[in-house]
Length: 188
Length: 75
Image (cartoon, rainbow over all chains, first blue to last red; front, side):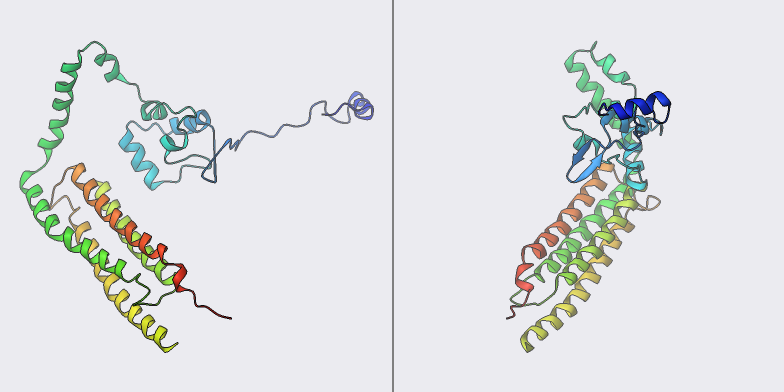
């Protein structure tokens, strides 16, 4: 505040406060990334910690299906890169138990440890059902990719005439279909 | 601009059938996500999602690259 004899007198008389009222830092959007404003890393992290997500997968599911709040990105690893980003365990407040163990184990043993860790998820899968899945998806995927590629041929302006709205509509419909597919696969 | 009208009709006709077909095919693939009938690893699911996403993106890029040609020249 600029010192001003008139103001000083008013302060003495108690008409105005000495310091101007500071605005609360509710949305102190500090960073602008690709045109959007974001909170600083620590502020955003505090809000995420209150959700108590226990794994990166849980975070992905949550970020995919919920609104996170103003100024909190759903891709913090990109937004905060070089601005305080450590890793997802730090972001979600997960204690890194495995790291402390690894320091005592030699590098060769770590590789074995990782392989053992991966195998149970593979064993859990029903092989008959997985075979069925592979068989059908190998049949259907090439067909769908061909069908989508055919749509791309419609962009040829020497054979077809269309407005921007038409092409936008097509893209929208396709993206919608894929969003539903993504949801179905990530549900389980 | 009879020619353009014909081109537009052709486009609408083909776009309708092709987009509907593609969306039906995608629906068929999302049926495979049903874990009571099928089973898959997360990697397999990711592979499928990625392949389809890439394809849709390339279609979008194809349309975007030819945006300019669609506007008619008027005086």
